[in-house]
Figure 1 (tube, rainbow, N blue to C red):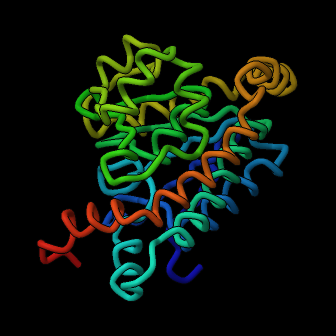
Figure 2 (tube, rainbow, N blue to C red):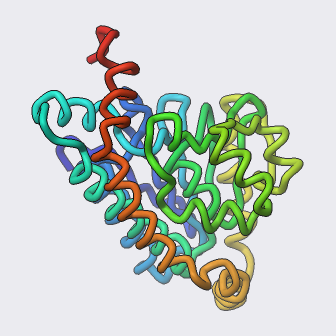
Amino acid sequence: MANAKVHLERRGAVALVTLDNPRDFNAMDQDMGPQFVDALGAVSADGSLRVAVITGAGGVFCAGGNLKRAWRHLQQHPHEGAGEVFWSYTGHVHQAVHTMLNMPQATICAVEGAASGAGLAWVLCSDLTVCANDAKLVAGFLGVGLTPAAGVTHLLTKAVGLPLASEMLLLNQGIPARRAAELGLVNHLTEPGRTLEHALALAHELAQNSGQALVATKKLMNKGRVRGLYNQMARERKSTAAAAENPDFRRLMHSFFGNKNRP
């Protein structure tokens, strides 16, 4: 596929899905988003696959939505916001969340660098996460004037409780990998550069289990965390698009990009 930003490889009963646009920190946009959704859909439809490993190229997992593209949109439309951009982004991201939670395969995220925005959502809706010990989980939304999307308000609160979720989201605080492991957001820590190796080994171990039992166990465990999730995601999508129309978003984007010679 020309200009592929997502690669799907098969390794026995394990699928490896790699986000590959490191120049933009593997961020979701109108190119990456559909390709990621298609890759997940292909894995989900393949009954011979039992586990999917999701990782990012270039030493970073995923930085959420592609802010560079949003900034270019604002420059090209000086009297508009970027609501339509994030409406598009979140459409793809929400499809990915739905597929990850409902696909019969177990999912493992292999995180190097940082998982922020949508990248945090992939961690929250995966079944297991392997993380480099120098990586961070970052919400990132309020820092650029956006509200959380991709089910993060629901999934993060379920995972760590309201007080800590509020701290991460409202204060825009990153969680170092070791702290994330203590909180139960991360299952395994590795040395930097070793997460994919460890995640693949874990995936092959999981793939030795009964396929039917693996599917049934995942389905049972997800019953609780998806209850109310999809309605919340619909509310998040509207809220994010509205926030991107607010002048505060343009101001913060100008502060981040406008005074720097960024591509």
